[in-house]
Length: 101
Image (tube, rainbow, N blue to C red):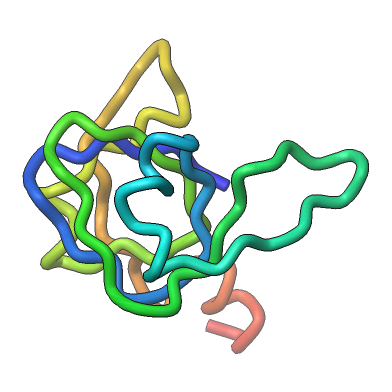
């Protein structure tokens, strides 16, 4: 999972997120808790109805960054060199190699 900081209010329509108890408390009806395995940290939730996150909130997710969401998120997974989130490119080099390009 990557860690993101919200730069401007964003709507997350679906996916699996790692949230704090305070973040969940405000959005409990829109989330479904995922039972953590013994080697995993608790706090993983499936979005069952779109949720909004406000500027300044930090969360973790495995999600594709779109052109719409990129300006609203900062990828802080690498805390030494935080950078704005970049849209995920379809047909990346690894995909091109698999397709013989």
